[in-house]
Amino acid sequence: MSFINPSPTKLGVVCLARLTFEAQLAEQWYAQARASLREIANVELCAIEKLVIETSNADAAIAELRAQNVDALVIISGTFALGGLAMQFAQAFAHIPLLLWAWHEPQEQTGKLRLNSLVGVNVNASNLYKLGHRPQTLYTAHDDVGARDHIARLARVAGIVRDLKSLRIAFIGGHAPGFDDLAVDKLALRRAIGVEIVDVGLQILVARAQAVAQDRARAASADLLKRFDDVVEISARQGDLFAALVIALTEFARENKFDALTLKCWGDLVEAYGIAGCGVVSILNDRGIYTGCEGDIMGTLTTLIARRLTGIHPFLTDFISVDRDTNTGVLWHGGCGAVGLADPKQKTHLFSHFAGGKGVTAGFALKPGRVTLLRLGDDGRNLRMLATTATALETEMIVRGTLARVKFDRDASVFLDEILSNGWEHHLVMAYGEIISELEMFARALNVPMTVK
Image (cartoon, rainbow, N blue to C red; front, side, top):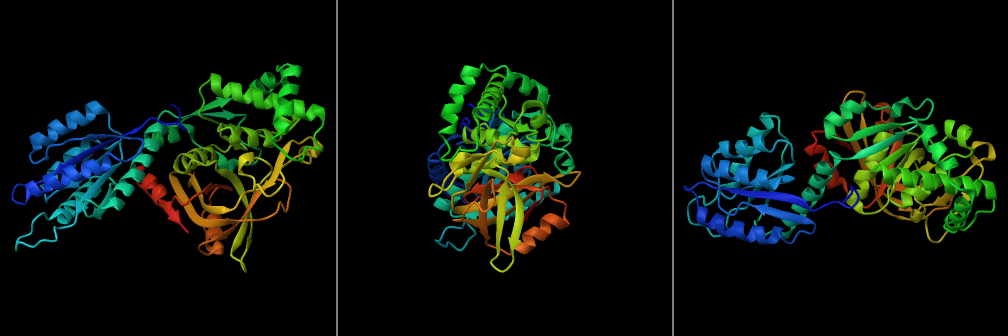
């Protein structure tokens, strides 16, 4: 398994109850809820089948769930239950996402409050909040299909939180000159979410690329150039350098078990090797070897998160313009978008215009569709998340590079003001699909503030 192809999420489930309410009905509904949750794809359900009523039941359930090494825990208030039970579970599983689920009361009235589930969750949510936990909450009918879908999203998020703890990113060459806004505290990041950032000298990759045999590079170049409709500007020498760097980075990532790379893709690389890395990054991203431009660690991390949530290659990009009259904006980067994201109605190009004619950069307009713009960044001290939604429009490649034109759902000027006024880094990730709900779950699971504009 890898970060992009994860193992199933182990979803723990318990149901709390109190015998002064209709625990037998809660037990029946709990069985139905378990059956529904078993239908969630890529989830291994680890449910405690007996109701948790006493602290001794909670102790036994905690031991069983720990043995199964669950990745998330759903705590159902089948009926109102004493608040200490939920606190036991929260303290035992403080390191994983938690969800408190309250059920609607039965429609049949008996003259007595039958479950009182919502008050149970209210008590538990308040207790856990004051203990420093940030559980998700859900209030639905026990058999609501929407509840299953919500919990499925939680499971996807929990799998990401789990896999971040073993994620390894190669930080090749540092970040681009002057782009100190992209700098991160590697130890603080590892402490916060578990990601390991490994420093790699740029010269190591340059040497590997230079060591690729010319006949191998030439053969690979012929195949790689076929991915593009227009390669007229690319000389045989540039094609060889392009292919050799793709080979070197691909093999380096595989041999060292890196989940992703960042690359100081211009400046030093051009001087040491002869071309910039933009077009190379386009190919690597299309292969699922996600590579962040300009040494952007957090942008690369955001890319990986978006890829897990959507299953589609994301686009790490600059936000280069806003048209207030049309509420649109242009997202562009100098040729690094995954070539598979190109609008199939238009041509794809490899250019040599960058770095004084040395190239090599990809060029195309990205395909249209619904998108989420996001970034996991930091404010100089703590992590934070930014997101909004938009529609990528059909457009032309108005400047050389990879670009998209988007129409914002909300006011583009407000989004731009948030970025500029609050010191957000200059890269965003454009992800195909609407994933605000999942991002909110992710941010809450990590206790990271999230801004939606």
